[in-house]
Amino acid sequence: MSVSSIGGTYGLSGSGMDIDSLVKNLMAGQQAKADALLQKKTVLEWQKSAYNTVYDDISSFRDAVFNYKLESTLSPHTVTSSNTSVATVTANADAADVTHSLVVAQLASGVNLTSSDSISSAAGAVKTTLATHMGITNSFSLTIGDGTTSKTLTVNPTDSINDVVSAINKAGANVKASYDSTLDRFFLSTTNMGSSAGIEITTSTTNTTGTDDGKAFIDGLNLFTSLPVATSVVDGANTTNTATYTSATGKDAVFQLDGVELTQASNTFTISGVKYNLTGVSTGASMDVSDNPVWGSANTTSLSVSYDVDAAVANIQTLVDSYNKILEELNGLVDETRYKDYTPLTDAQKEAMTDSDITAWETKAKSGMLHNDNTLTSLISSMRNAFSNSVSGISATYDTVSGKNVIYNTASSIGITTGAYSEGGKLELSTDKLKAALANNSDVLNELFGAVGTTKSDGTIDTKSQGIVGRLYDTIESSKKQLDQIAGTTVNAQYDTESDYAKRILTTSKQILSAEDRYDVMEAAYYTKYNAMEVALQQLSSQSSWLESFGTTS
Image (cartoon, one colour):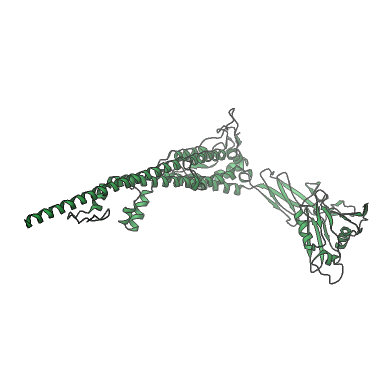
């Protein structure tokens, strides 16, 4: 009688041995080694994920910091208009804190052409094609533009009027078309404004009949009061008819700014850091029949530009708050306790635990993945230095309160200081002190935060002369590159094979496969030995039974 397959409890020989338990106990050492490798891989994956999260968070902070490189953030201005029906205005950091006077005689305008009558060739005409709608029988080319840009289209009798509208709008000729089927009217307008804007249309029709369908089409649109005479060129059996239509030009905006007469091709323009949006003509101002401005006793609109202290303070407060948030996160990661006795749970361990026990265990197991990490501690130190170190090259400012010269070359000099030790280096802002500094020198934020810094002979930036924001931005960029090398990024996590952690995880995965192979070989060998032992015991039992039988019969 043969022995059953590997595994189970053997009883044929009478041994009654639990082979599975015996093999399991013998394999315990190998199982522990395999479990250790799986736990090592899990910890590496947790650490890689933690690094990726830090990368994402400091990237977001860096994007926020970038805004503080802009003068519009560090030197915000506000502008008030005494008459918004004439003009609304905004100002950038280049605007001087002055009050401007404005009188508008004419708004800028483009060219708008509208059909003076229905465009159908007959009452009740079917509008499906130009042939049925306007009586067009031959194809022609149509060149349309605004005087500076032009495009050529081919128009066919089988096209509809809406096809022509679409072709013009897609041509990029700075001219827009539309058609109202209810009114049966066609509309053209320039996308640009000013005296250089206009609409110019040239049609060219070549056929053997001499019919000028291009001119018939434009004439039929009823857009022009003065119609051109076409020129004809005969070439053998073909006749080419050409006609050119030119509209009046647009109008420039005409205005007086601080008593000086100026013109602009648009109603929106920027002069000396102030962006003007003209919305109407000043009462009492106009243009005469010769297109000259008449100022008379026109009402003046006052535009007051001033440094927006409240906005500047709010911007710096936002920066401080963002800094404190990321600093708290980084401090928490490097200070978080690492419980080395709490290793990742194996599947076998989880089977013997409740869900709540598993959660509690894994919380401690995942704790402190970046405890005392060198890259993070270096980043924290550099971020603190960006604020604490002085900026060189800043001149003294006269303080109107003390009557002395002061130098605003550190964050603390304008009210940004480090809080209590227990706060882990978080910043605090004294808004009163910052407002006092801005009252003495409205450019203090540009000088302290926005300074580009001098370039050294080796091409690098001298950080001593670099502003706080530049230091902070460059520090984060440097740390991002380090983190990318260490653990890659969240975006590329699926494809990461080059980062340090990706390579360590791959190596560990290969070790796990090797350990699994060794385990299988050893386990099979043990089962084979026990099978052989059972076969031997069975044979011995059979022989013993035979001998006993022989003795009895004799």
